[in-house]
Length: 463
Image 1: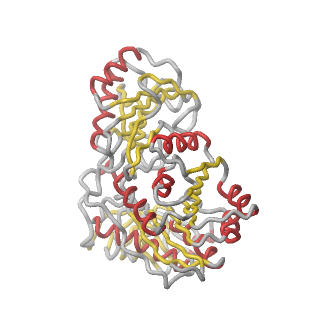
Image 2: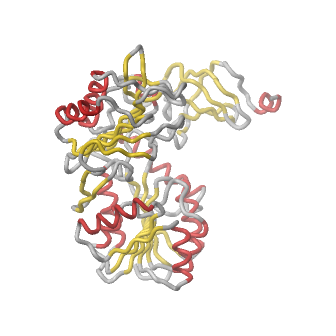
Image 3: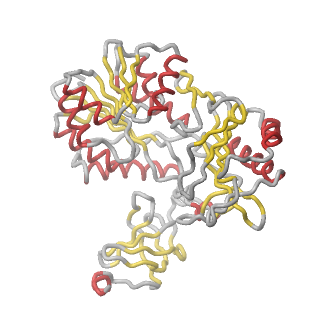
């Protein structure tokens, strides 16, 4: 502890003033005192603020905003404190224009610091006309508060439920559906889940809605298979919500933070609803990954196709293909597409979606992308284009080695994490690729997340 006192020029509970010089990648304000950074939630660049130190670490501290002495012109008035308490919209106090600038800066910073690519130009972030009401999926916890079944959001870093009906960033029809289902559950005295004792029954209400089709799927996550009286609950939901095509009961008996369990009971319809992406129809199950912002996903995938510049003669590999959302768009313009996906049910969905859209030049392979790519590179398989859309941890070293061995002429990297993207780009550049275009897209307005598409070409290749 003595070390902390020597290195930190502040002590816990100090009340101080300072100017915010920057934001962290999570959107926290940074103030420096004698070179020691303190992170302050809710503060913006160029603001002078009064704050209270709540945590002192060796390299940085955390402080609580008490008051803003000089306000940023980019500040937006926050009408409801609940949204700040839950952390669902960490950038809601920043104008949307400034959010897009913040996200572009994030990508530029990591490309310079981590990727050692200071000369690479980053395009302006493609934003939304209306940066609210965009989420096509909701996962809403259910708890008992004041003897009543309530739905809402957990307070940040806790499992205390804050009741909420208007989530701002979700499709308003989904918000209405959650309230309708909640009221039906209250009507039939369904017992809300008690996490502490692992008792009660209804744990979560999940709602998914097709952006283009309007079809809705309701998933009721329960602790036990018993959902009484489901013979009345189901007709009531269908009457209240005519868009519903599927009602699923997912049973999760474990005391865990994982939302879904293994057992599935279909209460109405089938375990699927339909939506469209770039004019292709997709069947989506209650477990399927599907981009939560359909409008921006279409922009994202259109950019992937622009960068791909397909002529109809190419062999394409789509690694981390999921249920085939990008694969089918590529297949329309390529000679042959090979999709790789680790999760077998997703591959079954992908095959069905290819069939549903009458697309035959697609082959799917179940397996870890890094293993499959390594095998293919050893076999001497060739690809003109490689598209990757990995999870947040980015590409495995083995995958990058396989890419450098296979040498596809062009690569399009779709990333949801700028830091791992920058790390991977540095390795790909070292392996003979040139970064041609960097295009961020805002898939999650009001949050600090940014999606980025990068076009890479093999040195010595035209294009």
